[in-house]
Image 1 (tube, one colour):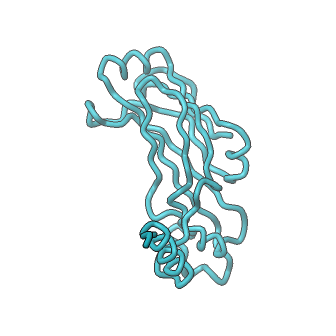
Image 2: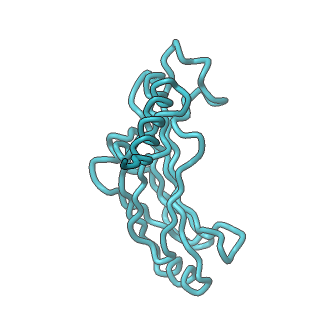
Length: 167
């Protein structure tokens, strides 16, 4: 007799999901890509300190009137319990935010589109302080999913133009 342990586990998880025992989460349908670039000074400092970079993504939206009681302290629906974080090398480059932590059941609580806020910081592996000032994303998820968004970073102490809201 063959054992089907993994299919049994899948069946149990599906039953629990349907019964509401575990949250439904996105499986990449809410993912997007970000490219992080660095000023020459930021690249040199991160390399010298062997420091990494972290991309933080927070999914949210505006509540329907019927879901207002589920809104957070600033009046929004949190779609993920905690920020999704993606670590990339201190040289910058590509980061894929999967959206896997999004609780898709909460999408029904939104009055409009799902939104995302993305920030970038140094990883604080070798330096306890964030070293970077970076462009950021704050807006409709659909706009971010169209194409990779480039976020440029400078050292905080570097003279640089103001960071920009993207996309």
